[in-house]
Image (cartoon, rainbow, N blue to C red; front, side, top):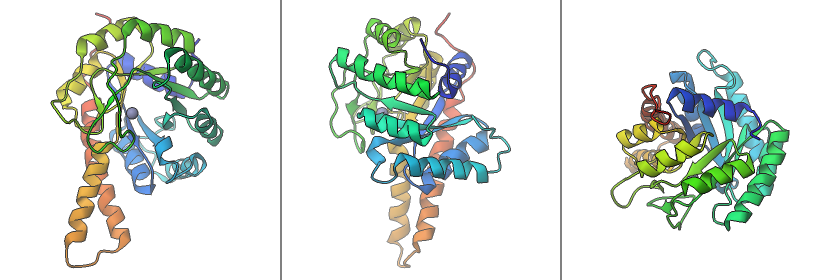
Length: 294
Ligand SMILES: [Zn+2]
């Protein structure tokens, strides 16, 4: 049974209406401001995603305080509460999920995809039971993505494409609200030609009713993303490309003879992040059509 929660509601609506919710990784003030700003300026939902990987930058409790504080101080004009989620990205530890649930996150991702299938089910189910009791949504992953260039979350990864009938079995047995699938995208930037296995994605979408999640949005051409969204992808994670853009802007800023102030550099990263997020938001908007139930 899928427990209804804000995360499930947000993504089910996206899948139904043929658009995708952007999940941008957050780890400092500027990334939070940029993610919240992207929702405010477009009126579209956004998920601010803190990876377990970034706990050394921010623990869930501090991230939650920052997130809720910023939302209260925003204009709120086009941004009614519930339009922005706070998500735990790629947690390998169940304890990290519990920490995020306790801190007031909207949703958590338990990633036990590297474990044998039965253990993936067991660990995911454990998180689903605890999360749903608190009205928190859960994403899990089946299959594996290859590690591309500049990936900060995964230094190694072997591509293991998601099997459609196993995906149905997994979702049924765990009760997850959303499923991350491996259909050709990579974590980080592509080393070769970007590709998405559309027929595999279509086969998964025909069997699996819960919203599907595409990790490795960075560097994926807009037409491929739009095609995946039409087939049932309701959440797309973007991390690396935002970081690369911000670091390039920083490099330019510190190359000048003048010694910039650290506060200026923070603003430089912020506007670089804004630009990339804005570009993705326009792609994720979709055209309102979907192919999955034709
Ligand atoms: Zn990912």
